[in-house]
Image (cartoon, rainbow, N blue to C red; front, side):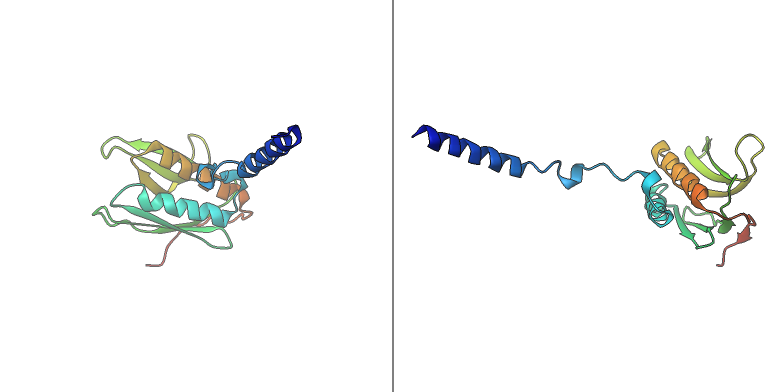
Length: 157
């Protein structure tokens, strides 16, 4: 083999290897940051968490254009009244641990701090990660809602 042929073969092989290396496979890609999602995308992520967080209980969420968050929880044997609340600046989300049922509870609060009144239970989960993800998603929804009203009303049955 001539020197030229070896160089050409080496260059072609290098080009082929570089072309095959387009990065990580799509299944290895990091999920998108919740900070970069729209509220509609955050709602989808929250739905996914609510569907698997505390079996057999399920939490379902809906968010209107006026930032009214509707929460319906079903299953688990105990009927739970749905609620809806307009998300507004100043509201907060908090996580507590129910020692009896051994689950984390995610609550919508009127404000941050000890004076924050619980406005409604959003989600129950045996896993801290799911509770903290739900917390962050709702915090970001509150941040991005530009509504000032905050009246709670029962959700339609």
